[in-house]
Amino acid sequence: MLFHTLSLALIGHLIFHYWEPERITIASVVLIPELLAVILLSHPLSLGNALWNVCVFLLVMGLSTVAYRLSPFHPLARFPGPTLNKITQFQAMWTNATSRQHLDRHEMHKKYGHIVRVGPNALSIVDVDAVNSVFGLNGLEKGRYYDARQLPGAPRGLLIMRGEPHAQRRRLWNRGLSTEAIRGYDASLGKRLVELTSRMESLKGSFDLTPLIVSFTFDVMGDVAFGQDLGMLEHGDTLGILKSIEGFNRSLALASHVPWLAPVFHRLPAIRPILQGMRGFAISNATKRIQSGGSSRDIWHYLADEAGLEKEKPELQNVIPDAVLVIIAGYDTIATALTALFWYLLKNPECYKRLQQEIDSTYPDHADPLLTPVPPSKLAYLNACINEALRLHPPVPTSGPRQVPYTVNDKVVAGQVIPAGTQIYVPPYTLHRDSRYFPLSPDKFIPERWLGVKELDTAAFIPFSYGPANCVGRQLAKQELLMVTSTLLQRFTFSLADGFDSDDWPNQANDYLTVTRASLFVRATVRDG
Ligand code: HEM
Image (cartoon, rainbow, N blue to C red; front, side):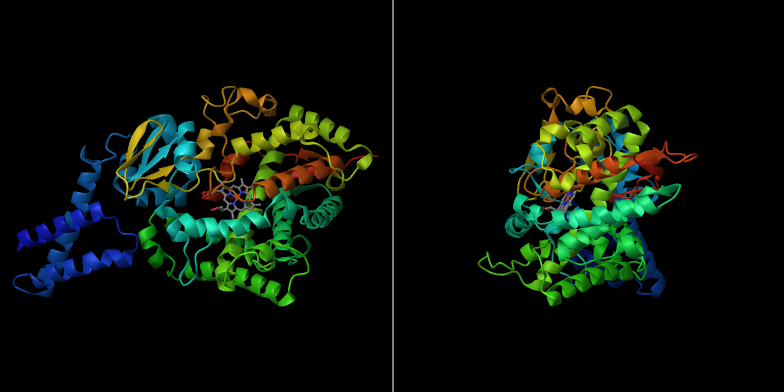
């Protein structure tokens, strides 16, 4: 009898080893018949015997999997990494839940080198060659990690699409975030900047800059995405939506490490309401937008192809997942970049001073930055500061993995032959701090390094990722960062609040694909003249 149980366990192991299930429902196709066979073959057939055999079956299958993953026969055996990460994906999930994933991975790279085995079938590669071979035109598609972002009953959004469907949807997004479309969003940005500066003027003493910036970028996204006034700056987070979004990001980030479990995870009583709440928020905004007809060209206008430029208009229910994406991708990342930029400037007064001078000379006599077109060379130092903040504190610090398809034998990345099925991360946080690409004190904020960019290997600078699935909103993001920083520095003198212990500020960010932001207490004094 034991022989049958052991044989079935080893067969189960072999099946899962060659064919990693993408969903627990698919895994059940193998597991349920095997478990039934284990039970029915129990001799004599009794509850006690059946339970014992099921336990032996699961134990043997588990142990043989562990032994294989740690053995020299595993295709990734030659790559170093922490033992627990080699054994199970649950370790990555646990690390993500209990610590700061990007910092943890950074430490792993310091210990194990440029290529680390971060999961049984996952590698993290810090090498500029990987940027093109993983993300580039002939690179790899998004890995299974992204499938956990598929909400129950919802269609796919751009972030989890691949191949031709991704290219088709991306065309709509490209239109909505083109130079011409962005020009149409300037009025919203200007209106919200007036609101932000008058809020700051009304604040006496020190205040937390983080929620103000978050509310501002959230309202800008509401205007730009749906033409909806989300009223976060005026009324605050009365519906608790920001908390919901953080919960949403966290839940999806954790599930992403074990995507085959996601359909179960998403239905857990603690998780389901969070996901439904976020989807409900997007649906309600989209519905309001559809009912109002939209008075201006917002991103929804382009995503729903209201101008009828496509052969077939997308069905509205297929546009909803992108409505969730545009809000989160749009406000969250820019808020992180802005708060990080302020933290670095406030910690580096020399840089702050130089930037202030550049802004004052570019916009003399209180000229409105939004209404005063200037060539980018005039704001070279501001661009350099933005790049440097994005380098040291990328809002998407680990990013999601790409996957070597099962249909090819293997793929050469950074000079290494990587076997089919492997998930590959190229973490911006660690790549950006690699002295091979940023030789001058890579952990220090030195905007001047960007003033002579030709000396730098900028291919290793990927805050917006790279290739066909790179950030479609990067131009809008850059524009918003330039305008907000110019306006705020023109209007106020900022300093860190007295007694605020700010040294560890960047390290308090939690990495849930995008990162969270800690409080940043500052003083803002209105400038004379
Ligand atoms: C500083 C600001 C921003 C940063 C650092 C940033 C960064 C990124 C990164 C790294 C990715 C790739 C993620 C992945 O591969 O998993 C991405 C994708 C994306 N971003 Fe951004 N982003 C920013 C702002 C924006 C804005 C303002 C929007 C839209 C309004 C936006 C929309 C998107 C979308 C839709 C994708 C998915 C692209 C695709 O899969 O084809 N992002 N972003």
